Image 1: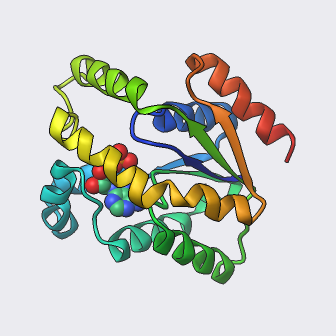
Image 2: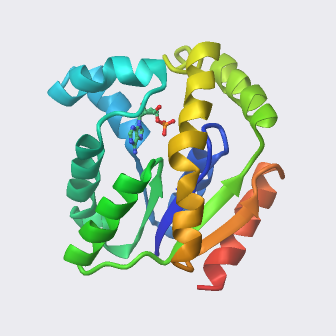
Length: 191
Ligand code: AMP
């Protein structure tokens, strides 16, 4: 199963991707997690992206496209993967289409976890207060506001992009975590 989880910051993509990994063995590919690891390790990519991430801006497309392309080639992805936080704009989605065609792979579904902004702000404040080891550098009010603006301007157009390709499924991300998981499982069953 090759899946994209699409949705704004705080929609629950990471939580749902982890559950899918635990239950089915599909590998969670979170560009945000990979970039945070690069920042923590002080790699060249980490140094290049640290400030952009802290401000809630997108990092350059070629950086994330390359990261995902290399990661998908690792053997653990052969039974399936979940893209969590990628693609984030139309250029990345087009690069993904090309990449998958080159690798002879095909997406099974794009699941939009739909949540309104008011709920997101509460959820992210809660995540910031509960994260072991302190909040993420970008879980603060200013960065969050910017991440939502970036989402609406750059990422939300992907809903139409994938709708037009006939692969989009939208689910209600305002329901509780178990209910959202159930809805995603239903979508996967229909594949
Ligand atoms: P996330 O953990 O998905 O919320 O991502 C955290 C931050 O990492 C984002 O605000 C961006 O700065 C960066 N990032 C993650 N994924 C991407 C992507 N696909 N394209 C560009 N920047 C990204």
